[in-house]
Length: 397
Image (cartoon, rainbow, N blue to C red; front, side, top):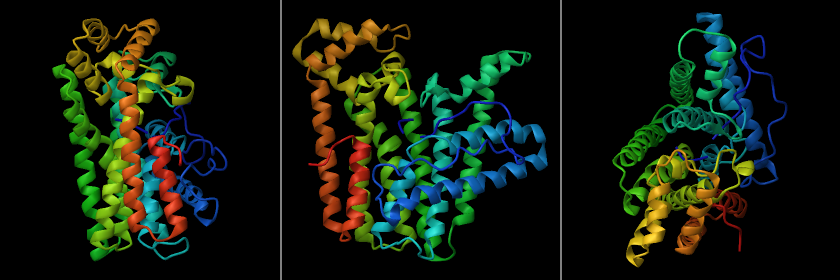
């Protein structure tokens, strides 16, 4: 899946008495999109909520089996707690704020628990996504299935290290999903508020799977279609990363249908811009900054909007040379850095990179305009606008 989630997966055993990894200390500084005032405590509150919950679940896991706690439960906990921009959680928080929520309100703890459930869902998504895409790195560290295969070799276990790593990563993702649903269910308020919040959570999980299905299926078919690429981006990123989290936060606070609708539309535009930015970074980004190798989408032959638009332009222009470079590169697992550089040059020469940048800017501007129409609180407007710009990788005017 696209985008954007957690990362540290080193080490083999539990870091504490309850199977939790070593406390990394204070959580990272508030991400872009959070104010420096009272709302800057959101990140700290989220990290504490996640730590408390995963610590309890690790204790429960230890009651079943010590090795299960020390290995699988600890791996999931490390993944969930270390790294990640907490983008989805932040969108939920600002959706809650846009609907009138304030730090110290009675439902603040519920908002933080729902945000924590989103982070555990993202943990599941990233673990399974890396496995399905055979990605070697996540946030500059080995992907979980790769790390587990290395553990297998290091400890001299029987059987295939790769099969062990894949199987254990599948279980780790399943466990993260179970914890996410449990955490959500525990946080769910009673009565109408609970019904309002449950609907987008239920829809989001199915949309996420539908997007991943379409992503894998179109890749297997080998076709490149810009409309299909945008459909996948909408399901996998626009809905899952921004629109539904905003809806969850606003629904918790009992926002009006008009406000929820406006936030959802702004979130969908910002989330789509987020995915298009991720596509660009996947080809043109610096691995030292992105934490993953450049060109993985190209090597896998993914039907990204970037690739589909490039092929369509090469066909329309009758540029046989550009078309040959694109076709030879897409889906070639042995693609070298030199040939990736040629692929980049073709995208630039065709004007595709600039066209995608313009589309990102347009989507971001539309998202911010829609937000301006419905957000009266200046602090909330600044915070949510900054988060949307950060997601899209755009700068304020």
